[in-house]
Amino acid sequence: MVAASQLRAAMAVRFEGQPYRVLFAEYHPGQGKMVGQTHARLKNLSTGSLWEHSFRPDLKLEELDVEKQPMDYLYDDGGDCYFMNPGTFEQIAIPRETIGPQAALLQPEMRVAVESVEGRPVSVSFPDVLEVRVAATTPPVHQQVDSVWKAARLESGVEIMVPQFIKNGDLIRLDVANLKYMDRAKGSGKS
Image (cartoon, rainbow, N blue to C red; front, side, top):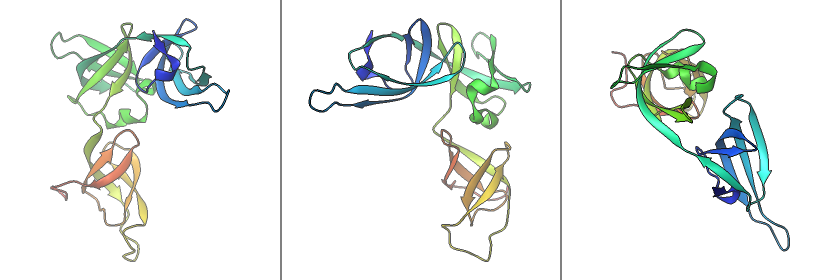
């Protein structure tokens, strides 16, 4: 059991008989006689729906174990992404919408951690930063300053905003969680 005031992102809990993944949690202390509360954004692992709720800090929730298993990405059939356990060769399918927009970054044979709760895959844990190649972007507009951004399409098809100096074929570092440009990678340029 865990107190609501101790909720943190990435943990899983059971509330009113339903399993939830904590996406965001923040404790707000009370003032004077006001009791504090924990504001949390939760994802129902049975239905996939999102829910925001404020909990009393003393409320006890059952904490569920989140198991991580390294798996190799195989392919995407349009609706599901398929992964294989490299030790047992067992394969599992995870709905693309469960993974989210980061699913477009998966490459064949890429090893990621598949997270499961109660034996059910609930998410894929990507590295914080990936090096990706820019497939297409517009040329700089009148050599404007670097603080002006432009649209770029990555080789995976994901569209992001990049600084003006980035060109087709450049290798960049991508913040995977937010799908945002970080900086140009070493060894950047066309290969």
